[in-house]
Length: 147
Image 1: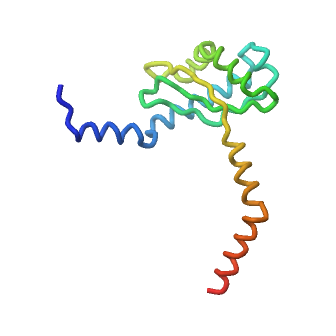
Image 2: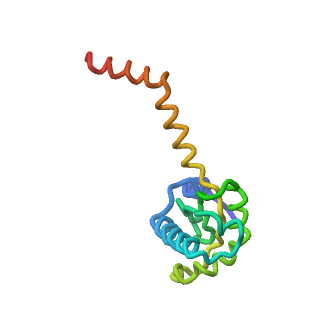
């Protein structure tokens, strides 16, 4: 089998490209299904029952067979333990999400990851409010006023 350099470069750029419209739509449907399952308390696990879990994003693989859910446990100090409990119950959650995702040929496998975006936002906010950055921003504003 011969593979031309052109077809290889197409495959490579497709792998690093942005998600398709269908991936985004199915990811949003999966996010809603997960949020509903967790809100109803369908999953019977001591780690999960005591926590309010926010599902911030679900990223679908290009073939729509893997759904990676980014979650933030809000009522628990042991965030990693909650994510581990979700991963242990992923097959049960997959079965509960099936009716909401019935238009798919294959039901995606759910993988749960801790969402650190809120912590990153907090770090950026603290940096922007630090005296050094505020001083530099004020200096830039003064230069813009002079022009």
